[in-house]
Length: 265
Length: 259
Image 1: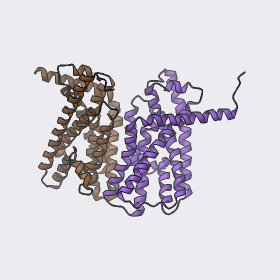
Image 2: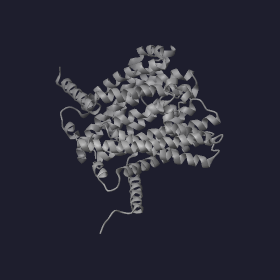
Image 3: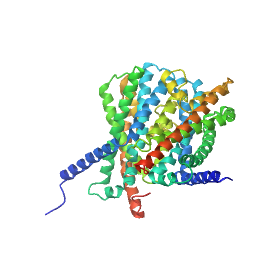
Image 4: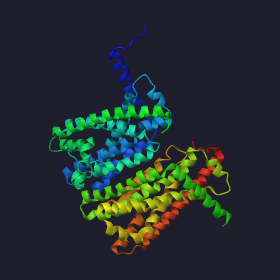
């Protein structure tokens, strides 16, 4: 006799689905060298041009390295976790995914985490090698807080990627829009270009991006000491992205079901 | 009109239709155009952030070239990719018109639209950044910008065609884009890092950009412009060689789909 499964069992099932989705995405990405190139080359290029044009002071060098890593993470998120649902549609697996027993949202977030971990790992490795090659004096004053910041980076980029992925589901030109979404955040994200360099009427934009707050937290944790406010704001924004992604996903899937267009935009 | 010319024109017309299918006008206007504008703005403002106000003008000119090549012109690689994804290479290979002619003629609309978009991007970015004077001074150098776009397109097609049988096909144009950004003096002035200058000297864009900068400063520019032309021609030869090798390979192994 079968009946409703116990909450513990459902939770275990969801956790298993989440981990399997993350692993599946990572395996898929291993066979896609383009994603590796985009995550690996961008931090190297940005770091070299930013540092070699004019050698920065040690404190500024740490800020530049953090900003470059987060800028590259945005670029990587757009192409990797942001493309999860686009790839599901390309491979013809989206309809099966949303009709499965487990919640499609769990699968989406699992895959987004898998893609983000892959991107973060590649960016970290590329940045460390470049910093060593350029002999940049980078400070790591509070390593434990840096580790906390790194965890928030991964969670935040995962939810951001899931949100982007849902938006790309609404168009058949997802690849083109992916490319177009990179530079708005490069310019207005408050990362490599500080907020003060933006026109006054645009300075509110970076406040909406969790990566800008994480940048502030990491830069402080690497040097003079961390403060709680940027970390709290980043966590709150991350939670908001997660809720928004969940609702957007459900809405776009409902729309696609109504139109019978799950596997094509 | 001779038959050969008519065939090439028909191939170019096909390229135009392909372009509209791959990049609909809405995507060009609402995605590619803003991306180009923001790319120019990003590099120009970044120049001011990392090296002070003096570097803004330098970075603006470099940003223009990066938008022209790595954002607009890079779309020409859709020509060889299209044949791979739609399995149409065998038809071209067995046709009367040489394969290279068909590929290059189809790439012409991509280049033309990319250059038109570049003009709009440059005008908007110059207005946003308050660099109108510099933008006007750059107008006489548009032929050199066109030459850089041609060289980049030809090398992009050559690189994509040479690697198209591997899964690395989309890697080559991306790596070319990153190398251009790093090595061609768009943002990082030449003379800072030796190996970067060495790589940039054999790629398209580097010499053309040097010619434009020299011209703006009132220095001799012709040698650099001729070097850019030479690299453009060398890229064309590499492209023809790559097409020849892939055609021969397809004939021998039946790998028309470039699986």
